[in-house]
Image (cartoon, rainbow, N blue to C red; front, side):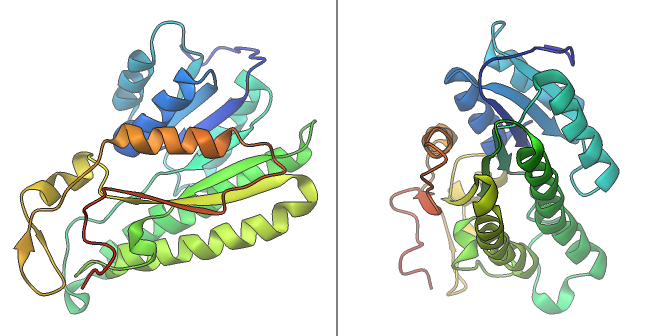
Length: 257
């Protein structure tokens, strides 16, 4: 659908990074479960593809936005209010690993800032806007689910920017959980390991391990992440999954290194 008012009586979700990978899988899972979904991302064409995959009867809108830009975030949430009237769920998913994996001493300032601006500042800006909307709407409240990562617990080699932002995401999740209590705003985090997306293609052919070797790693279907997010999202606001880890069963996480 285009950005026309939908006046949906269903629950409404906003998914950032919805043009591919985990964002697309989660958006399709939510739409399939009956949610109205706003699809956000930097490029309009992939968002249109996600909307088409949701089917002709899906209640979706596409809103191109760069979450690292405050003006884009403000416009994004204004579009959601205009089209749906309220916001019940933010899936804070937009993120980047960065241009390449490099040793700490070789990471440029610009590459560091790119990862921090998208993964951390972007997540904060969207959470802040969602918090304001959920606090002000009637009935009050809603849910924020942050996309953390297994890297919020255990880093990969040469991933200092990505790992630092994913550890910071855990702090963001905890602070939002605490500050949202008086307003029925729940916040949880899903830590994902080796979902099969464009970002993880190299894992199936060989990726650097902590011991310096290259090794292929198992992956899981991104749809399994979507099902988990739907479960977290459809709990009553009196209940919250604070942290969930969903990962390929045989990936080297437990015992990594």
